[in-house]
Length: 182
Ligand SMILES: [Fe+2]
Ligand SMILES: [Fe+2]
Image 1: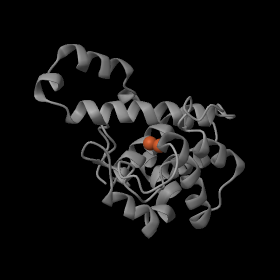
Image 2 (image 1 turned 30 degrees about the vertical axis):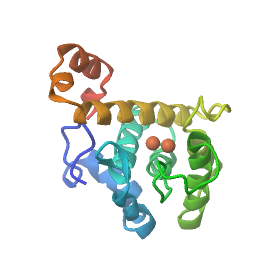
Image 3 (image 1 turned 90 degrees about the horizontal axis):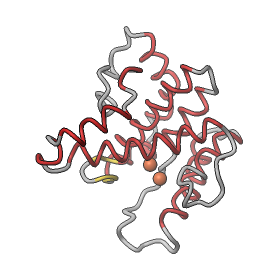
Image 4 (image 1 turned 45 degrees about the vertical axis):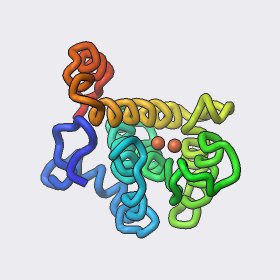
C-alpha cells in the first residue's frame, strides 16, 4: 500500500515519525496471510478490501492519536474491521450482510490477534446503525464514522469523470476531509 485515500503521506516513508508509528502498530498484522488475502476482494467498486481497511485504519489512527485516545487498539481494530474472506455479493453465507460480516470479522480477528474488549466492540459494531447496538467506546464511533467516510471517498474517487469533476462533490469531499491531519 502506498497511501491512504486522499492522504499526502507515503505509508512507506518510515522517516516520518507519524508513519513509522502507524506501521509499528500494524506491522505484525500486515504480514499475515489472513490480512493480505483481503487484497483479493473488492470492497467498494475497484477498491480492495485491504486498501479500504488500511484507509479506515489510517484515518482512525490520525484522529485517535490527535486526541490521545486508545490509538493502538483502535488502529488495529480498524484494520481488522472487515476481516472476512468472501464476496458479499454472492449468497454463500446465511444472513444479512451488514449484520453478519462484523461478527465474522471479529471471529477471524480473534484467530490471528489478541482482541481486547475495546477492539471487539469496535469491530462488531462498526456497521452501526445497521447493527442496532451502538459502539460503546469513543474509538468505536471513530471507526464507524471513518468506515462510512472512507467508503464514500472510495466511491467518489472512482465514479464517472462528470461526478469526479463536479465542484459540488469535490467541495463536499474536501469539507468533510481530514486531509489536514495527514
Ligand atoms: Fe464492514
Ligand atoms: Fe468497512
